[in-house]
Image: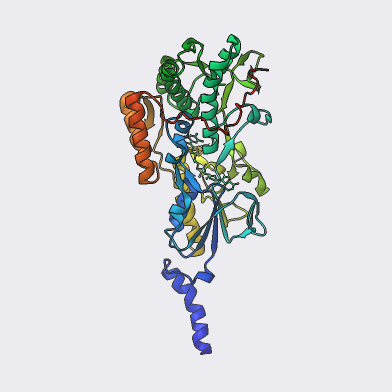
Length: 452
Ligand SMILES: Cc1cc2nc3c(=O)[nH]c(=O)nc-3n(C[C@H](O)[C@H](O)[C@H](O)COP(=O)(O)OP(=O)(O)OC[C@H]3O[C@@H](n4cnc5c(N)ncnc54)[C@H](O)[C@@H]3O)c2cc1C
């Protein structure tokens, strides 16, 4: 009996190496904790499903958010749940996965523990950080109080309420100057999010002002896109930048280039150099940084507060900790730059991190991250989008069609795809955005100084 037992002890690890997919008994499986069910986290989860690890996935929300269409929730085009997919719908399919809806507040790298708000601390053998990004206010503590932002569904709904409320308030406002302020909408940051939001705002506002608010003067409505650099969409080739600018201007969007915002307070925007402008609605889309969880790790962070990782996506000092997506800082994109904070990077890093965790469990060599660049795109309202992919630059109807197909393809869930396609068809045919309700509990507009 003794001999058999010692033979088993020798054989088990050998068998594990020879047959990597062979499952360990449940109690002996290493535990992997994944923080975030975004693009990165969800792909980690798919890679670890039904493997010889116990996986605990933690997210403060109970859904996966499809952020590329978030601006359409803010502009009343889509209902929020069309771009949110329940996390448990993915998790419940696999026995080795568990989901906790909780906010992670800290990470103890030495004790290998994750602290959360509601539950007990969660221990791990391997940790995958995929908590995404937050707005970058460049140290200005007042900006979040006086501007809207667009990083999750709650914020998108808050912005939608703010936009629609501005019109209702303008109808009741007797003072011409205050009404003009209510009807001025400023977006700071002309990257893809700012550009798509500006185009969608123009499409929301222009048609409804005629039909729903006949007492308001259309000429008082201003949508202003503010950019610190010389051009909108400066990560796109110059030809597409020019196309985007012309198209937005045609839609009635004013583009204010080379204008750096220094301060926003109660609807008064102050630019570097002292110029000012009044707007009741100011949206901050001017920068992103890694989730604040990165600051918790106690290690030296890279540009935008991102966590420097090795090509194998783990930390040098703690190889059991992997970081993917917006939180990770890894150079090598186009030769030297860091990989950008975009969905495809997060998706592909998530897959690689899952493979590397399994490789560590199986005592096999880890593989470096290789990126397959599928290009970038941004829509410019109906019938137009700019696409820069595989060396080809497109715009206009064909670009827009590609944009539509790609977004439907990457959305999770049949129900969400159907909801989005129906909403797009309705908006396209009627020129009206269907989700124009203002909740009773809506927060006061951010620039609550219209009457001060
Ligand atoms: C408005 C907007 C538009 C965008 N448009 C595009 C686009 O068109 N194309 C493109 O490629 N990219 C786009 N992006 C960027 C893209 O969405 C991100 O690069 C991608 O989501 C990064 O994936 P991630 O897994 O790192 O983070 P995310 O997908 O953001 O997921 C992070 C997850 O972590 C959770 N989380 C965060 N902090 C905690 C915590 N403390 N505790 C528990 N859970 C936490 C969040 O709830 C979230 O579910 C856009 C982003 C935004 C905000």
